[in-house]
Structures are given as C-alpha cells and as structure tokens.
Image (cartoon, rainbow, N blue to C red; front, side):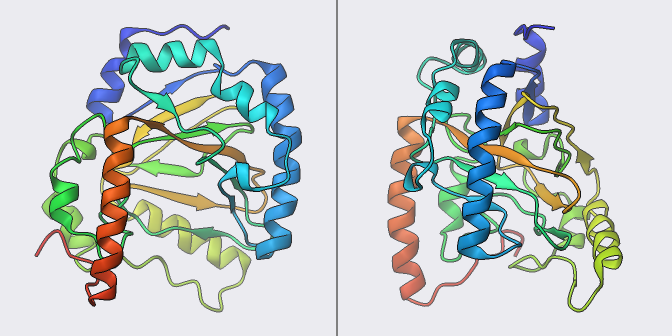
Length: 269
C-alpha cells in the first residue's frame, strides 16, 4: 500500500514524540541502499571490530553515495516532512547521517537516555532546558532497510521533565547500562532485555523495511541489539538552521567546559 500522509502523523508526533511513515521508501530504493549498506557494515567491522554498530558520517567513506542522495531527494519523503513540520526543515543527508548495524558476536544495549542531556559530558543543562520542547530542535530519524525492533521509547516524555518513578530508576549521572561483564550470549541477551523493560512506560517500536521513523530525541529512548537480527537502519536528522547554529555553539562551549573540569550535570539534583 502506498504511503499516505494524514493528521494522525501530526497527532502522534506532537503527543507521543514519534511518528512512522510506513513503507515510504520504494522497493527499488531499499534495494539500492541495502547493497551499499552491506559494504558499509564490512567497513565498520574492519575499522572497529565485530561489535561495531555504526558508520558515520557516510560521506567520509568510499561508498556509492547515490542511493543516499536518492533518499534525501525522495519527493514523497520531503513532502511528508514539510507537511508534518514546515518547508524550513530538511534531512541531514550523507554529510551527517550514519548507518546502524547489528553487532556480529554478542548482544548489547545502550543506556536509557535523552540525547544531549544524558550523554554529553560538559553540557550546560540550561541550554538543553531552554529548547527541549521546541520542535525546531532535536529531531532524529531511524529509517529501516530491514525489519527493526531495536528502539524503545517512553511516549510523551519529550513534553516534560523526568517523572518521580524515572528519577528513582535512574537517579545518577552518567546513567549506567546493564552489567554484561563476563556473561555468555544468552545471559547477555536476557540482561539487556530486563534492563530495557525496567524503565516505566517503555514501548518497543516496530519498523518494517522502508519505514521512516521521525522522533524527538529529547524523549527517553534506548537501543537493544542482537546479532541474529540483521540491521541496516539509516540514522539521520531532520534539521533546521536554528538547530545547526545551536549545535555549533553548544559543542564549542561544552568543549571549553570539559577542559575546565566540568562533568555531566544531573538534571534531577
């Protein structure tokens, strides 16, 4: 069934913090992207080892760039983004985007987090607080080339600060992931899933090949990865001039703060 934009996408994005454009990539584009992303997976593992799960930015690597440019220029996708947000928003594209892969050997998951706030040492949290509910900032993309159930979110958390039950679950910063040291494969898989489900209100996202998920990365989210679940997911942004300026200024400032000895601020103390 051909993709059709509707008011439901707007409602989901505003209230839940994510929406999915189902089957918006044509099969021919998915096929071309799979081909080049298979090469990208090999490059990532050659450079960083079998557990490598990302190659970014795509433009920095000796890969056929045309399928990625075809994705960026896809009329149906750009129309949907502009109807959801405005014509001032645009895809990041190969200069910033990456591809996400499954680990080759062992299960692994990230820590639960909200981007920037919980994973950028030296960040002045006042800068994040000033913009975390502004739709012009913090829009991230997972575009699946194979079925992808790696990402979990807490719907609606992009609209608010942490709830007491979330603070109780993760009181300290930096947030720790599950303890996987020395665990064999099956125990690692179980420990990751137990950790993922320990977040109150967690919901798993289900993407099929050709689905484009746009989400606010200021909501609580996590990735849980399994070697037997083949993955090639475009990891992109939907950007604005305002957010590009904010990123440049914030990265420069936090580097200075790191050099001055600032660590990771705790938003709940």
